[in-house]
Amino acid sequence: MSDNALELLDPEVISQQVRREVDRALKRNIKGLDFLVADREPVGHMPKDVLYRDGTAVLYRYRPLLDEIYRVPLLVVSPPTNRGYIFDLAKGQSFFEYLLQQGYDVYNLDWNPPRRDESVLGFDDYVGRFIPAARDAIEEVTGESDISLAGYCAGGTLATIYAALKPTQGIRNLVTLATPIDFSHMHLFQTWADKRYFDVDLLVRELELIPPEIMLGAFDLARPANRTAGRVNLWTNMWNDEFVKSYRMFDRWAAETLPIPGVYFGQLIKDLMWENALINGKLEVCGQTADLRHIDAAILNIVAKHDHVVSHESTGPLMTMTSSNDRDEIVAKGGHVSLVAGPAALRRLWPHIDTWLGKRST
Amino acid sequence: MSEKPFNPVAAWQDAIQRWEHELNAWSGQFTQSEEFGALIGQATKATIYAQKAMAEQTETVLRSLNLPSKSQIEEISQRLAVIEDHIAQIRLEMGEGAQKTPGAEPRRTRKPPAEPKADER
Image (cartoon, rainbow over all chains, first blue to last red; front, side, top):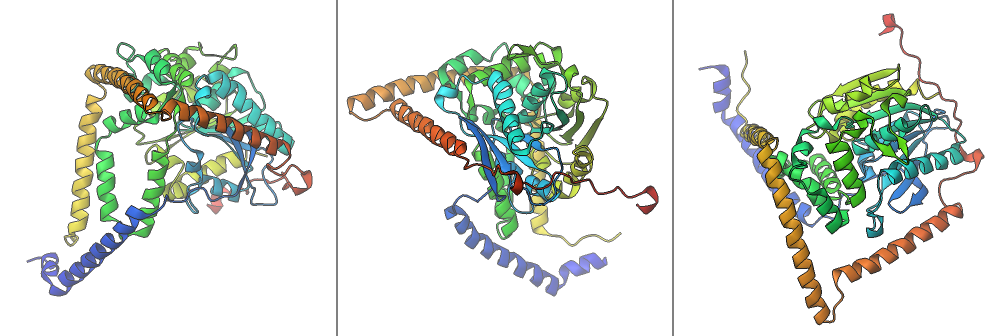
């Protein structure tokens, strides 16, 4: 009989395992009850001020932590479907906390749930009105006309479209995180919004504001086991306070997905998903054509290796179709959200972003 | 080669992970098929029509009971949101946003830390 088999039969080892499992089972039950009655997990802990507000759009400035900061401010555009607190989930898991500690002047263009009268907002507003207004507000505070522009997911797409409208514009750096550009590679959404069957006009006309369930349904169908497996993992780890806290923060973020204006949704489907207009040079915003060749800023394209929402290929044109001669790419381990939140990003990804951006922010 | 002692919790988690991967992989294939596109297109359309019919019915019932309907509450909520927006705008214009005094601003002269030379790495 092997040593290992003998160890398995050792009454002391068995008793230790039983004690540990009984202890965890008790904790699971006690903490499980706490979990059911607990309030929402608090999120967003770094102090910030509102600098600009226009309906759904709100610009925050995160208060700098150091007396000496980089000259070029950093504007991060949130995706219109999601709350920006994903960048500042909790102490030690916050992208913005990390950036502030490294000496960046961080701004976030975030979104409130749009009102019904804002259902007419489209690219002209998101790209042609809100981003320029945010830049003006930043310039007023800092006196700096140069900027580093960053965006996550659809926020990165909006930032890229803005950068593609005219050459230069004072954009020193463009940092894109899980940002779709070539929508022919957005496979899940391509089949979900199949032109032959998907009546986008009906949706926009009848709903005006597109509720998050419409899009979340597609994610759930693509990954039907995730929710159940997540709950099972939660129960298994209910004794672990850190795991539960992290689960609740992410769960809150996912549950607080925002509705989006119908006109913006229609443009997303027709112009980007069906026509791939950003790639074909046919996307018109505020009477100007968004042309990727206009982008001459330094580019850092960050993609997640196991991202089931935004594939590596869909971000590719940032590295091939832009005019920039300073382009870098990071393929990080993990999934879509793990780029902007969680302890793994803090250890593995954000230091690389700092090294890249720091020397380009003076 | 030493084997790890059997851990029933780890085995349970492994099994859940395998089930998750297998089901997701199967569903991933289905959601890329044309049938999925057709199905989801029809289902979305049907849901919209059903919701619309239900909303109209409910609105009629509420009106007959002399109760406010969803659209009336939404209208009030929208007016409140506009008022809130205007208050926020006025507060910002009164300087209650971020500090705008140059003296309170940190110096914008930071340089990145020097990269270690190749032989220091």
